[in-house]
Length: 420
Image (cartoon, rainbow, N blue to C red; front, side, top):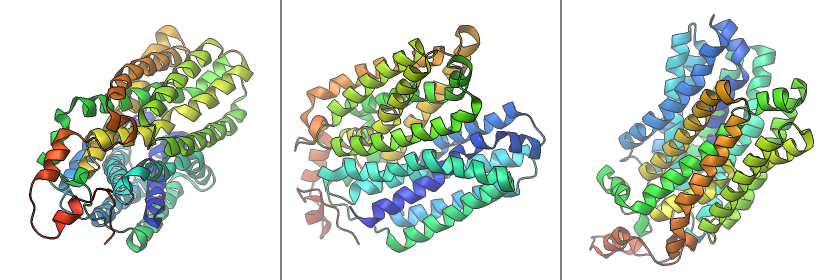
């Protein structure tokens, strides 16, 4: 695996740490910005909405840049957002900081996943996506507790300065180690042109892949967003135990991500079907047995193993149904974030009327719907396991004559991305 892919994971780790930092700093931020906890909660929503809408827009602006140059620009924007957050003297300044950070984070996720896939052979894209996305799992497992610890000991401003320092380190590593791939396969033929990248929106399998990702992540976050109140108020566990349980959940996501990444290339659709079906079972089991601590914890860890950990397989499916181009993958990341928003928002709306078990049942229903959108992919051998069968648009793209040395590169049957 190229070093570049591990460096991309470091950048995603910094972005994820910032994304979840607010959740662990709510009391300090509320006191420091002279506002209420509920207002601070909106900062999480603002970040997510900025990711969903602004991320693709920033990616469009950077389409003509090389991947490494685009990532460095994004690091600069993201650093600015965190510095503004560290210096914020009012709630609305913090809102601006979160918008800036959210836009940059989403563009970074999309371009990083695109680049990780283009730096390796087509048969290793699942593993490469998994390595890059391990930054997300580690951000949940270590990054958020780190920001919470620093904020608790030194104040919330110090937490954002720490994230700024992580951003600088990740940017320097990117400058030193990340290389630009050559467009070595036909799936990259549309990269650099918004019109050519967006043509994939006409493909039903690509649209189904986007919907599946939204539902899978929505199912998981309808539960994850409410783990703390469920475990304390329904399961009856002491509040002091919750951080340790969340670390255990984070460890489960790291293990699951590693396993899924190894299965994603050859058994893409089967992995998605099996993982999503298990997630539906775990969510239903958690809802039914939330009052029994041992069973509740087993089901919670199960959700960690097969929830967000479907990311590598989801990414491979999108890249096969669409392409590895940056905008395509950023759009996919926005649909994933949409799942986070929908799962948590609908879950919040259900709780006052149906109680804390309702988000878990919502998650189960979303997972079942996700299964319905995954099943059609079984009919396509290329989507199932990466056979030589390609979508018609890509075959046509590869058949068009080109001039210069790029012709040989785009015709490379192995799909290998040479680094420059």
